[in-house]
Length: 334
Ligand code: CUA
Image (cartoon, rainbow, N blue to C red; front, side, top):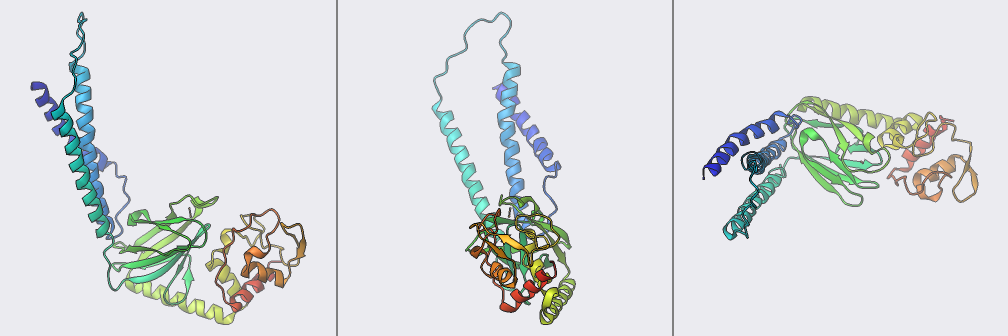
């Protein structure tokens, strides 16, 4: 009985110490969203349970090793123990209750992170190999995600190709981005600052570079940025031509695979492309004239350049005028 008492006291003393050690390691980034609060609360509950279970196993183990060592000259066999029904029932029922309690807490926390604000701002997110694109309700898109502080935002997300995962560690929530299905991500930023969205699903060669800035600012700064962007986008499109095309290839993430300067990426470079002779994967050759460039944008599967894998380039929804602008931009890179 004395041994049980000593072990019990040691567990009671060491559990808070281990919990403190886990908390002090500061593994969590700052809390930048309302949704981070319940997630961190849940994490702390888990850490407390982990600290207790760790001590519950390690203390009796180490205690037994130290106290019940075989004495010098003791050559007797140990007691033979057949089993203990009471003990087995206890160590089945208690963990069952604990796991059920944590399942409830987990579901409750998940619910807390998904509370819908009726006035949530909506932004469309597109994930593609290997970039992010954000479309704002004011009719422009950007490679930066700007969010106003203390306002819930719902991101409606879709992938153009494979499965990606939208993850801003400071917001805590992580959500897969799937081709052919829109997933939802609700977040209420509570801290002005600059963060980064990264892709948390292995999605190919440049997965680790699939990052874009996330900027949380005051509502006034956000509104100012939005009206600037909307005006700039409208002006550029109205103007048309190569400058508009240049903006479009940047907005649509084309530069993730095609370089304008001759650098070899996943797709053919645009430098010197116009007017050159292109070898296709079906063995034929063709001249990269305007019709070829246009067809390659509108229907990427129609002609694959030799040496590049087919089916990588997604089909973009662009207007006729936008395609014309992009082609006119490509002409300037010859
Ligand atoms: Cu997209 Cu990893």
